[in-house]
Image (tube, rainbow, N blue to C red; front, side):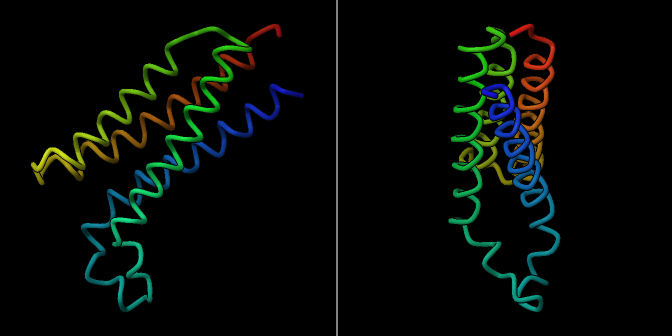
Length: 126
């Protein structure tokens, strides 16, 4: 039963990080159209920070729990950390050209960490 809960957290984490990656990749292209669709709130930095924090909380909880209790493999955690490092560099480096590249790549890396965690959890005999 505990494994099922961990897998659901991973699926939520994959969804949250992929949504973050899509949001950050598409936002520069649709920024001028958002007010016409009533979605200007998506351009608010608070939305971006909230998505990042949600992904961080879910990722740390899910992967940390799976590492301690199920598979004891560090690779998903390393991928998660690299994903957040890419997001951090993209957001705070001050180099605007890096943002649309690093942030979506970081979001996809985080989703990949959750995917890898699911595979490891399923292959474990626990």
